[in-house]
Length: 399
Image: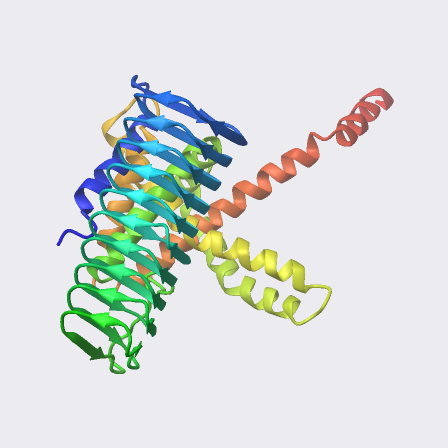
């Protein structure tokens, strides 16, 4: 069983980073707020925007990074999505790899499917030709998987058909009457799964009950530092995907934050630590008031983004610093900086006893630098506003 095919998946992501940060030929890169692309393409296609919709035919790989990403075409290669909402229709000859808050798969995928998200749905129309690895808070498996399935999710609902073995790690597991499992069902949870007497399971059913010493939290719900193999892999892959999006959409901002960390990492760390501690208290106080509730919801969303992005920005700064030692002239490649930095952090997070300290330090430094750069740009924007410019001109005229 080859669920994740990690090496192939990671190499595909690294290729995307290198292409985005290099001047190599043989690929199409497009970035704008709204992208609606159709037609035939022989080269790799990279699309970055607020809304990305691909309706064409591609004989190579397709990468989409967007707020909303929709694939309606056919791909002879692989399809990658990094988005808030990702919908995959059409047909994929090779494999699909997705990272999004919400993922819906309606497609015919001849290869493997790997998905990370908050809510994952394999609809009745979906068909996975090989293995599937699904990591989410909530998973709905209503389609067909020709081989094995691995599911790590808090809430799992299986109504479809899996011809191979099924391994599930979760809290609430439901196997519906329409479900068919052609191999063994092995699941780990705190409570026994709800398995309908009408569901057909050809192989054995094995339940491993979780004790107080272990946990079934999904990777999405787990608070790192990542320790296990799967959690570490998810952290690394997810961070690289988000890093690609940041470099492709906010490259100048990432460079500014990396420079800030290089110059003032200690101050940034102290400021970030203060924000990490104080922000939840302030947001909670806002949330208990009717007027402040909308602001609190926005604030908690921003806090969550900072929680994830802060460590990635620190990783990029670490990678850039190391590459600068080897490259004395010019800026280092920020694509390679992302890869090197995240690998280093993933390794540091596995150090016994000190992993939490390193984790909080990386988060704090990134969050503090992000706040400093944001308020610096806000202040400069206020200073350079038309009103400020007019006031300055009047002052000079008076003098």
